[in-house]
Image 1 (cartoon, rainbow, N blue to C red):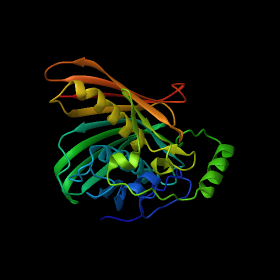
Image 2: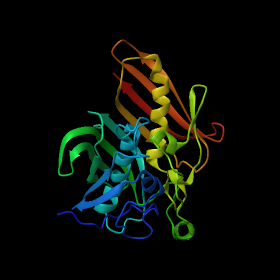
Image 3: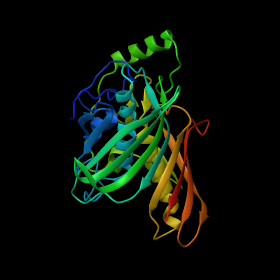
Length: 289
């Protein structure tokens, strides 16, 4: 039975109990909806409408799907550990097994399958069709999440009090009107790189604050897409993101390069940096085939 007490969705790093909907700034901006949970499995929906859609408006953007999967992955950790004080994505792997169906909503479900002292393993799926059956899968998630601390957090009461104060002072922002996912990101191309502004509606944790893990993944995917232009006819099949540190809400540069290219496959590495390259915040390896 689905219940509505989905925890850990308000971007407060676990500092504020229960939320009945998906409330992080990025998920609010995308128009995502919580469908509750079934035990420790968390379910959410993203409709095919601006700003979650592609430029032509035909289907949900694959980068928005990645962001939704990252989000329900973190929510699944909260659902599995009552009273959890925080979590953050350590690693995110996505296998692309289909494409969002034109005009249809995308559903995402995740469940924490293994808990250890410092991290949790989460498995998930995104699909189109009916909320109750993953008949048209789009992507499969394998994620590793830290347990007990959120982005940029350190254990201890003093740090927690500071986070609570920042979260309490947070003023919800309204994202500007955007007709597609690209417009919501608001990034620009700089040579071979992709520059993303530190917009408040791209935030996941309001307690630091920090960019949503899905925002970072989307930027890396965009940089990889630009690099993949040299390998026409190939499509993204899998990606693995390692989150090295919290992504502050400031300009982030995403760059990518082709490691190996053949007629049937290409491997691409991407990296996210801040402060003129001084802060490496994430890296990604992906396969186009």
